[in-house]
Length: 366
Image: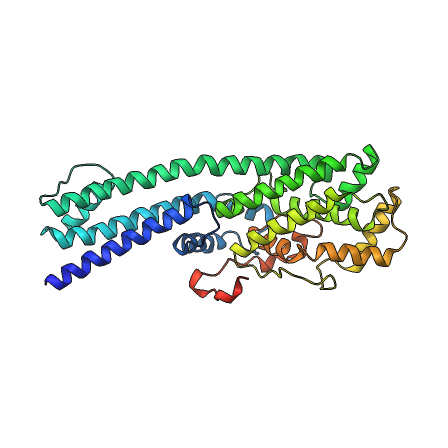
């Protein structure tokens, strides 16, 4: 009988330790760490949402449903942590107190929620009560600290997305970004845009790998998305650097580099296959016909285009290949609204929910 109690205590302590470790990795460590309990909860909630937001429904319906996904998944994660803490402390109280399973459960719940209506008798049980109360307050404090940081990063991200609608239209398009800039400012206005969006990508890289749930927080407007906005700016900069016959502007190239580094880091966290050292000749999801149509549209709008169209296409493909797969993969993951050269590459039937952590091969992540 003693061995059973020892085993129950050790098992309960392991559950509590694993739960606290998951909370620290998810909320406290400023690094892109895989917390498999958190991932399991998010995937499980996503699969439930899939019944109401799959390809059988139109986009407006899916967007309304998925707007609740990330907040509900966070609440489900908190509930999971609390449930596991109660389960772990129930095992430990049962091992050190002769109160039965129901009595141990009552002690665990009363201690974690600091209700105080059930008191332990022996010294070991009192120590457990103190630690349970401390961990309950610890989780609450972590969540209170986490949410303001989360929504602050969300607001910074969405400010850039909303401003881009003025420059790139809705849905955003890299071609329209260049056309409008030429019409109103002879392209000089793009210099500051490249700099601001380089900073935007750096901020998104840091925030969306530290707080991965941010990836699934949708924009306030159904036709906006941080993924499609990123794609439009990167495509605009790639067209500018490869096809527009103007003096070379390094800020556009720095923007592209910041953008593909950001998208790759986020894609890596979600096990989206990305080649970190692609060849310029690797295939991309933009066809030559689509590029030619964009080239002709820019030329018709009056922009000075490079005369060697073949070389311009090779240069554009050489820039695009750096972020192509990550962009398409994130558009699929987030169910992004349709936008040129990004989410329109994903068929609605391919908006599949991600796999559970243990079903992922370790080799899937570079």
